[in-house]
Image 1 (tube, rainbow, N blue to C red):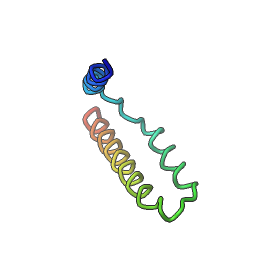
Image 2 (image 1 turned 180 degrees about the vertical axis):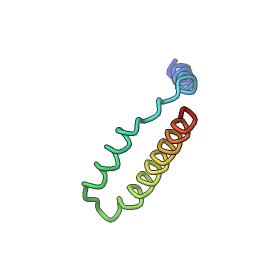
Image 3 (image 1 turned 90 degrees about the vertical axis):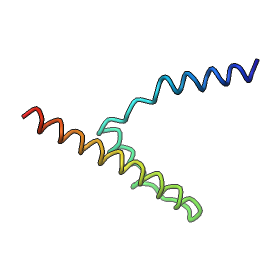
Length: 72
């Protein structure tokens, strides 16, 4: 039973992707990370996380600028 439920749960996640972050949410997360202190062993994980958030933020801004240009 547990294996079947797990497979169904995975299929539901694939069919319902996580909604994208808003610009404000990305800015909040980046600000939150910038205000924190991390131990040496956490630095690589934080670096990777911030890099991914930054890429999402850049994509969001780039997409928004394209939409604005197309609308104008």
